[in-house]
Image 1 (tube, rainbow, N blue to C red):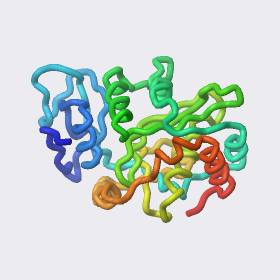
Image 2: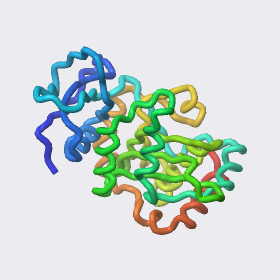
Image 3: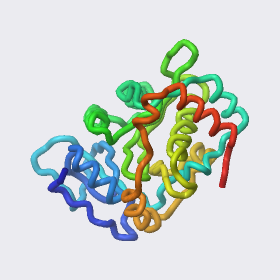
Image 4: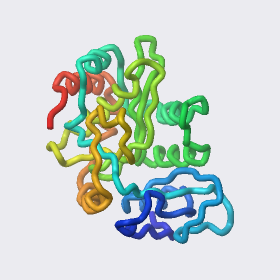
Length: 252
């Protein structure tokens, strides 16, 4: 798939918000992530010179943070309490992507940013086999947490996660790291978390400067990616994989 939009490498001193406009077509999103950009809906009198959309449509801001949040899957900090929580839940892959992104987009959530256009765009990506989710359910088979994002080669561009029960989103992250580590050598896969918050830092997420992140993208995207389909067909096996990962804890 090709796009008419161009995503040039940002200037080293550019702000986190580097462009404004374009669209959310699958080919546009793939090109954007491959160039280190990600979208967020915008409002207000923003002015940017690149990717300007003259004919209306969603107001989209494109970000490439100066300090990028990243997680090496093997560096996830799994506490004893989190490992215990992993044993209480059951996990699956791509079993209910739309429910996960809807949970992340819940208007009642503080800081909710996922618009209807964003939701629809990533559902399209999921249906094309590029966006994936990890679901977390309790003993009553109720969805209590999840994470979703875009998979390009050995890069998983994490978009959002949610929980309605204790550690639901963290357990989803344990499952995601387990999946990425299942068939890969340490240091060969990466999760993009966009930014770092104190909460994410406590889980082992670190900051890379923009140049380091962008320099590493071609090798990541060109590498063989994880087998989401394998684990989507084996939720019991995936649950055990996540629990085994939790037992091993953090490995730097």
